[in-house]
View (cartoon, rainbow, N blue to C red):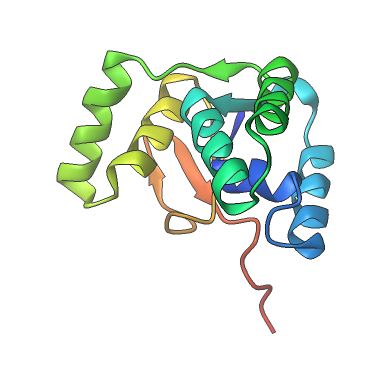
Length: 139
């Protein structure tokens, strides 16, 4: 099963937003075989911005972290077809454009799951289901 990782999973694994989120993100990565995980190219760009702006890391340090992610997992390209499908997602489902790019890319790459806290947990489109791994557990 292929699984796409949204930016927040990568950022939390990098320690952004505290140790609890980092522990969850790293546990997630261990739960899947390395060949199952994929990273949208867009997530790499977003991660660089998060690491330099929010985490205030030096650009060279952020670049090295991003390159490490891109070396570790197969990438999902943001192709013209992904952009076209993202616009259709925005139109039909009122999702944000960049979230739609993530979802469309995951679908084109044959992923069955997109791990993200930015979209509605359980939303399924073209065989890809969004799962929020950081959601509060039921009481």
